[in-house]
Image (cartoon, rainbow, N blue to C red):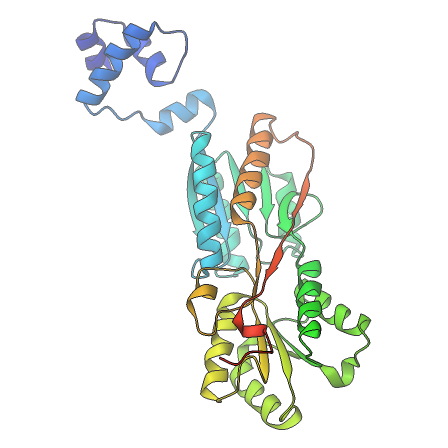
Length: 325
């Protein structure tokens, strides 16, 4: 900075104001200083700047599964929105492990990030509720949790739309792949029951950990020759199911219909193309950053917000019963 001041013919304090973005500097002086900043490849000391301004211009983003294309797209949207405010992100992947999540919270705190966007591994854990007492703002994404500002979608209502679609296609047996505690499972189940089906005979749940063996047994024995509508909790799991059904030589969607969740790029690249629930990822990124910035500017005193963004069902070849692929 001293060398830039000498080359530009200005004081070191003027150089400091220029590189910190102050608007009080004469435009011509600013131009001369920035010319030498570029020539000398000057890089401001971010740590020193953060000590002075009490802002690191860093946001921590904690997600549960970086290998899921949905989260990759969410991160891209968040990074683009954060850049508009002059912020960079630090990405942390927990693999749904609560201990890793706690460790990353500690690391981000030590890095003095200005705020955190988080997909919780287990929001019911007592530790997570203690995050409300943190000095830095925390915004939850993809889930709606009391006590935090959140940007999410209604998994429950989205799943009801999936059930309505499968029923309209003439399916009378239904299978959910995922956890029974999942809001998607609850919405799917409730709509099936509301539509007059017998849950004991017409509705089944398979955990994704043992789906290969259980699905073969279910379709081969209990539901042999019957038409089944399957709803998988995300597109990755739906893709696994699709390959398994092909191995079993099950006709899709004449015998079995399949619907995923997230509308990731893979849903359009498989054959048959996958029906799935679209989440407005760009909107999730924009609103989550907007709320976090508001919290950062108000020192965490901003009003708690719960934004629920609408989804839509994208119907493709895997669930249109009148055609066989």
